[in-house]
Image (tube, rainbow, N blue to C red):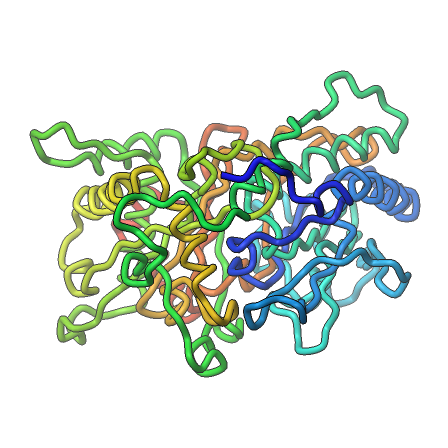
Length: 474
C-alpha cells in the first residue's frame, strides 16, 4: 500500500476518498438539549458556541469547508472540498423561541417527557433539510441555537459525505473541549489524536487496493450496493420525509439483558449473538410487523436489511480506529417478509445477522473495505452506487446504524452550558427515512433507539407485544 501521505492532508483540506464519494450526501441533523439558568443570556451562549466552533474548525479544517462538484474528476458526480472564504454562510445562527406563541414548552416540561422528538419540528428546530436542493451551497457543518425557556436545543448539522459516527465523535469531543476553553476553564486532559487519524486515510485512496483472493471490486460480490439508473424515481421515497416520523424508544438494562438471553441461538454448535445483533433483529422484525399484514403477503415480498459497519478494522492494512473521514460499509441480511412475520423467534433473525457479519469477514479475508473501495473505483458515475435498502425505505427494506460506542453523554461542555447534554435527539421526522439508530448507552445503563417508520404505522408498532416486551415509548 502507499506510504506517501496525501499532499492534500498537508494543506489541511483532504481529498475525498472513494468511500466518502459514495457516503450519503445529506446532513445528519443532531439536536442536543442543554439546561440553562432561567436568566441566561442568549448572546453570551451564542458567543461561546461561535468561538468554540471556530477553534474546532482550526483543529479540523474539513469543518471549515463546503462540498462542491469536482469537474476534473474522471468519474461523473464526483465532489471535492474547498475552504469557505466568504462570509455568506453564518456558522451559528440564533432561533429565539422563549416568547414564541407556537412553541411554548419549557426545558423542564420537555425533560419531564424525555424530550419527545415529536416536539421538534424540522422546520423550526433545524437549519437545513436532510438533502441539499439543487444549486444550494453545502457547508460541512452549520449550527442553529434554539433558545427556549430554561434551556437550549442545539441543532448541529454535519454533511455525512465527509464523516461517519467515529468522525462525528472526534469532532464533538474537541468542540466540547473548546467550549470549556471559551469559558476560560482549565483543560485538565486535552483531547489528543495520533497523526495516523489523518495519514491512514491514504489506505483508502490507494489504487490498486490490496484485494482478497478472487475479488476485484465486482458488484455481484456486494449485494448491499445497487446501481440506480433513474435516481429521481428509484430514490423518491427516501428523498422526502412526508409521512415519515422518528420515535424514541428506551430499553432498560434489564430489558437488554433479557433480550440478549432470548436471542441466543437454540443450537449446540457454539453460536452466539451480541446485544447489537439482538437489537437489530428486534428492530427489523418489529418494523416489518408494523408496516405489513402477513395475511396480505404472497411470500414473494423480500426485505433487505442493511446494517452499517465501521470499515476501519476491515481493511488491509488496518486503519486507525479513530481515523478521520467516512469508512462506512454495510452488511446485508435478506428474507421474505412473510417468513420474518410468521415467527416471533428473535433468535433466528439474530443468528442470521451474526452469520452475515461472520461471512463478510471470512469471504473477504479481513479486506472487505478494500474491495468496496475497488468497487467504487470501477464505477463511471459516483452518484449511481447506493445501499440496496435505500430503494424502498420506508417500506419493504430497512437500514440501521449504531452510535453505541460514542460516549456523547459523558462530554463536559462547561458550567455555562449546564455541563452535559440532557439527551440526543433528532427532528420529528427522524434522521433519515427508514433508518433505525441505536444510541449510546444512557447514563442509567439502558439504551435508547431512534426508530424511523411511517407515521400511520407507529401505533401498531407501539402496541406490538413482542416489541413492547422490551421497548418503552418516549
